[in-house]
Length: 143
Image: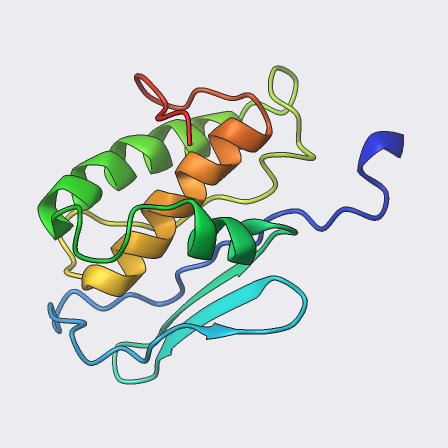
């Protein structure tokens, strides 16, 4: 716990997803703050994604694949696998650090969150695995 004083841990939340409205194409572009906060809000579908992680904003702009490089279906598949393992680790704080895995992620493969949400979740998962030397599922791209 002493190691993480002063470090903001990830708060990645998808709240209140509605299966009756399957398309998220109208989601706002991410808003970035000066403190490495990325936020996407779609009031119509009542969801919000917030990523707070030092260095992620810079990494996203400098290292991540550009938007359009990966298909949405590829990222959806990887995100679902990553989120399953992430949530398993949240539920096992005696094995996995609760400082890294603080809260579950509500992500359904049956909801179309749109490209931007999947892009940010996918890239955050890659960033997280590389930064904290974790492997959530399969080979982690060394970016």
